[in-house]
Amino acid sequence: MKEKILKALIEGESVALKYKDVKKYANMKTGHEMIFLGHVNPAKEIAAEILSELSETPKTEIYNKHTTNEIIEKIKKNVKNKRVLILFNDFQELSKSTVNVFINIIDHVQFFCSIRGKLRKNQGQLLKKMIIISDPTDEITDIKVPIIIFAGTLAFLVYLKVAMSLQGLMAYLVLASVWFGTIMARTLLWIAR
Image 1 (cartoon, one colour):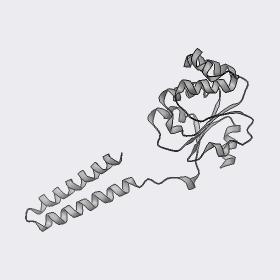
Image 2 (tube, rainbow, N blue to C red):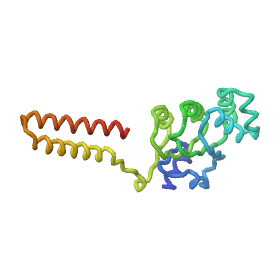
Image 3 (spheres, rainbow, N blue to C red):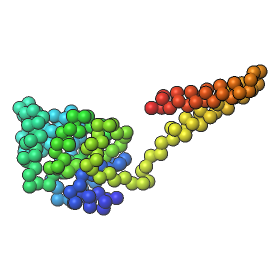
């Protein structure tokens, strides 16, 4: 896995690593100037932190004197003819504005990050520009849906058993049981969301 990451970074690709901590891989020799971000929000603060690392100007001074767009342009100027790698954990926590900042600078710097949770829709555009690397042994199997289907089937059978012990039309009972099982499964799926 380390070889895959190293190869992708040396080839100039940005890398998203699933279910791992990027700090464990920070000591790889890639020839980049590395900037590790401890947090990924708010966007202007992150942009100021990156520029501060590149220019040796205090982050507070950058934050107070410039707009986010000005900071982005200064980052682009400062990384010309440099290989810069920005490392951070928890890609899934990126806000929409931080994603926009990273999209603006991804053509000038590389990212090496981890994904350790469920992604949001607005993050897909940035993720498309990255290579996702995962270890098959770390894959998480989601068993919510099978459990919900099982619970719906169980509810159907219990209701059918109770309905059969009472008097009435068989077709009505079976249809009512199917509807009850379906409603239970749909409700449980909605709750699990």
